[in-house]
Amino acid sequence: MSENILKISGLKVAYGGIKAVKGIALEVNRGELVTLIGANGAGKTTTLKAITGTLPACKVEGSVSYLGQPLLDKQLSAKSFKLVQSKLAMVPEGRGVFTRMTIHENLLMGAYTRKDQAGIDADIEKWYAVFPRLKERSSQLAGTLSGGEQQMLAMARALMCHPTLLLLDEPSMGLSPIMVEKIFEVIRDVSAQGITILLVEQNARLALQAATRAYVMESGAITMSGKAADMLHDPRVQAAYLGE
Ligand code: ATP
Image (cartoon, rainbow, N blue to C red; front, side, top):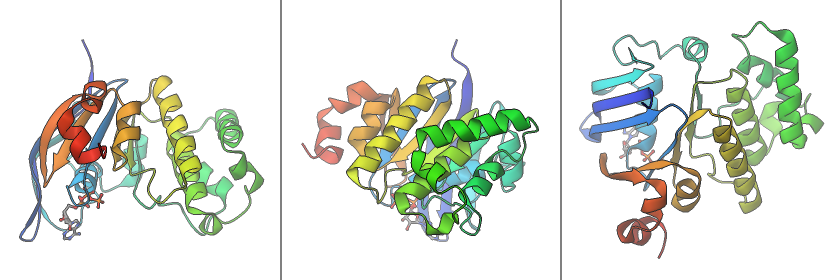
């Protein structure tokens, strides 16, 4: 039996009169790499923000549970410290690195809830090996990094807490093709190590190639779901999202 890590049901989010999410259901099971694809404004980021409790003042209905615990009511969310403690890590759109801290300090912040100093040091070295550019710039302020370098740092920082669930919001946005390839290589590696991932992406082809399952979101609703490999060959997905 597959273990449910994240379960969303009947989720509705409205910003004033704008119904951004209109009653969606979505599940992520342990070890899966699930992608949520869709056009600009479909409601993907709003869905992720509902999971992490980082929505601005707005009307929210439905339920979101993580490892069987409700997130929406208790707002375990809202406090990122508690989220990290519960091993739910998010790399937000726009990366969200601590711009006035060095790269090294950003990585240490990712390990804030850990006590195993030797393990923390080993993990930092591991990420420096994956992203040598971060090592070269370890004492540089994160705000001075390029967009691609900030994306690497944001992912490495999120992974420093050894997450049970990793939420990624548009990791390829604004990056060069080489950088996009590198970031997806890391996403596939992290997934192969058994970390459960929910990936929001506009680059549908790359996302579907990397994912096990996929959901398509259109105007606040889930309009399709299934195996990512099947979706790649679905004529509706091809026409709407793969430029075929
Ligand atoms: P993108 O890929 O462009 O980020 P998305 O699928 O992530 O799009 P959302 O950012 O979730 O979409 O936006 C869904 C809808 O909600 C859009 O119509 C957007 O304008 C609206 N919206 C998002 N945030 C707010 C907000 N803070 N106040 C009012 N409306 C908002």
